Amino acid sequence: MTAGTRLWRGFVVLLALTAIAGQGALAWGATWVADNRQWISDRAFALQFEPDPELLTYVRDASLTEEGEIYLFASLPEIVPAGEFDRYCSRDEPGIGVLGCYRLAEKRIYLYDVTDERLEAMEPVIAAHEMLHAAWHRFTTAEQQRLAGLLEEGFAALPDDHPLHERIASYEANDPNSRIPELYALMGTEIAELPKELEQHYRTFFTDRSSVVALADEVYRIFATFDSELQSLADDLKARSDIIDGLKAQYELDSSVLGADISVYNERVARYNAGEDVSGSNRFDAERDDLIARQQALKAERDEILRQIDEYNALLDQLNILNQELGELNQGINITLEEQESIGDTEEVASQ
Image (cartoon, rainbow, N blue to C red; front, side):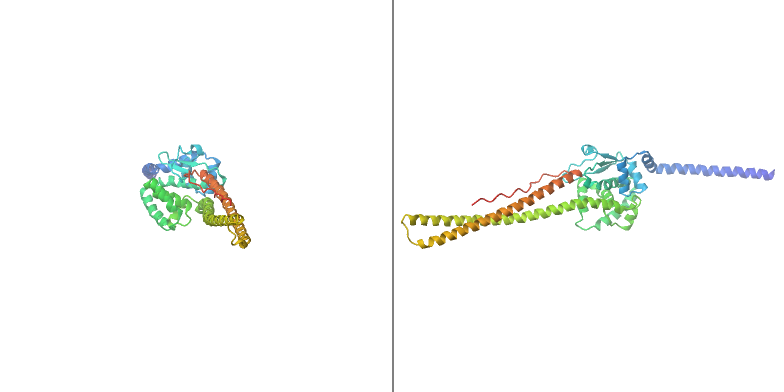
């Protein structure tokens, strides 16, 4: 009995200890749930969200991790047609293309539907960009401050002429508080070389971050190629215009001098024929031959000017076609450009 009693008492004590431990676990569990309510909510929303196939390709092409996918899908991303997009994300500023936004009040992501096949690589980049915004707003203040230092370090390492400088300045002009959150999203999706600690951080969201950076580079190279070709054509046209202007000025001067010399010659011939002036008649043939040669030379000048004008206008046509294509590309990424004065056709030289 004693042994049995002891055993029973021991069993009771064990139950009591287990009960106390259970109460502690329940209290700890309640605290953990309270502290991680957003984490739980994100996973619940992500599990219930049914992404369309296009969003799944964004996840694949941007090489998102499971964690990155959760933050994206927890934000209930919606691909919005161009005609409706400004209802969700708008920024009326010429030269600025808004392709997505994370609306903090709703904790939702809206993505612009890029329909130009040449620019489709940008869609997973924007999806990843906005996913990082969603992640940023879930970090503690201490984590944001730690990342801010790393982001500024990585940003300072970029060359002075890197286009990100201009883009960040644009963001700051629109909202001074946007600098660090935008650096976080932009550097994570578009900058290849980052501080080691920052690179390690982004591995939470990307299995291979170089994939999304390469997609962004692909699109920017398209625009860089257009910019280079347009600048080259514009420079060529400017140089040709200066040459044509010089040729036209010389042509007009030569034409004026020749016209005056022909008038003098004709007056002398008329006086000679009228018997008023018989001096120098033996030079008429030589003078006439010289004037005819000068007329032919002037015609050659005119023909050269017209040839150069034709070449100029052919290049101008190329420039206008490129401008039109670039306009279509800009429209494809939701950019509205200010109307600019176009280069006009070079006027034709007057005939002589």
